[in-house]
Length: 167
Image (cartoon, rainbow, N blue to C red; front, top):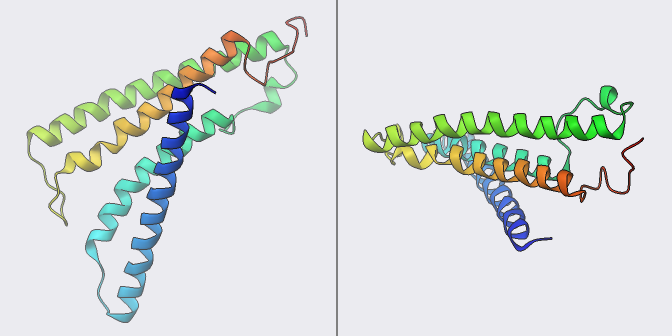
């Protein structure tokens, strides 16, 4: 495994562990606060929502890495290896295109939040801090799609390794 790939994998794992731990802790404390103190911690929803975006995108990146994202295996499993390889490449290219669109609008959103000094409703933190979860998470996804294309084209993808093209 390359050093960059190892580094990105560690980032994905740390992001998922930290975001889910903080989300779980804040939500638990908020529920206890509502039932015991009869008051809600209004800031918890704001933070959990921002972390949920980052956790979802990091989880999607892990799914692309592990090839466990949603697919239509029923239709592709009967196809030849050449067609399967083509469809896998097409899926990755379309994934990159989708992520580039999200990245484009995510960056413009963050720039708009930063230049307008927009603050979050409850904590009064700069809104761009929450907005950065989109470009960062989509950046992980784009890396994974590019890496997947590289593995397929170089013949190092386990899915196509050792398979003849004539099948």
